[in-house]
Image (cartoon, rainbow, N blue to C red; front, side, top):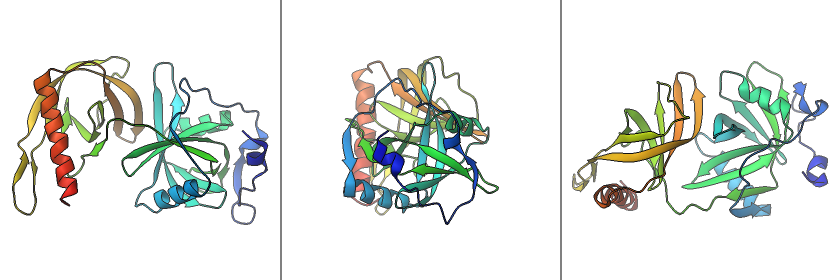
Length: 265
């Protein structure tokens, strides 16, 4: 972390009482197996991006916890964007993310906005006094917009799609995000799991853009997991090629979603 960042005033002196000051602890940066890559967003562009993201209805950040075989993601809700800092509320219930922040001086967050994924590293300085697990983090100097060759499409709650009885939050040509109240053995790949895609209709005319399909996915591997209350959230990646007819079924579904978005469905 640069000296400039350490000299930033985190604009909390007259506004917050700290329950814990993490800077008094001996901490080292978290070690992530993959370097951050993508288009760098800095300066005014970064400020505009964060301001626009934080004005959304539910600006959700994901704290990445590196594990041996994958990264787990814990949800944090942005409650305040300051000139140099962020107030973020830990939505997890097990306390693991708080322990992680106490242990590491530099950690990685990600978020999604306008069909793009972003990731950045920052220092979480302290826990703010109060009944809720609210933390104070430095506003990052650089955010990486991940290069994504396959666009994700939001499904839930408008489209009820399922993968092995798990509801789907979003999907792309290479993977999906699912949620369930059951625990998934995330260390093992899912083989020959069924992907159920719903019909897509024009809500005004009733015209059918897509009639629905059932696809047997050769294999999907878990790339991250996040536990929130009774719900478990999983990211899965399709790591084997599909038969041509099944690829066409998925592509036709994504095309119908794109058409529906374009026509304002």
